[in-house]
Amino acid sequence: MSCGQSHSQARELVAHGKEATLVIDTLSISRSNLYYRKRAYASHADRSQDERIVAACGEKPAYSYRRVAWWL
Image: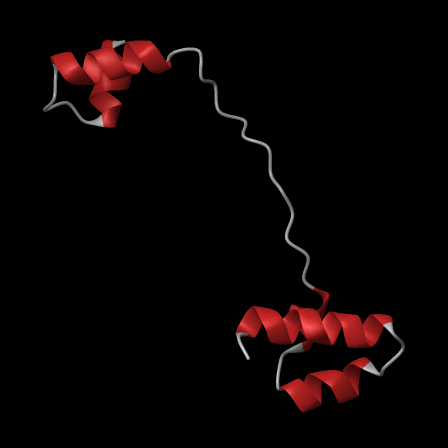
């Protein structure tokens, strides 16, 4: 059984009323993994300058990201 399968099985067992301590001991997983929920994060990056950045990197391939930022 893979890690993901055992964690999802553990969540199902706890949701059906089984004791969390018994479930995590039986499946040998940590309590934090039992309650962990992955959250989606929105990107806060400003994408308005992407074309200029790509063009600048094409013109000056030896420039680092700091130098490209200064140049723009």
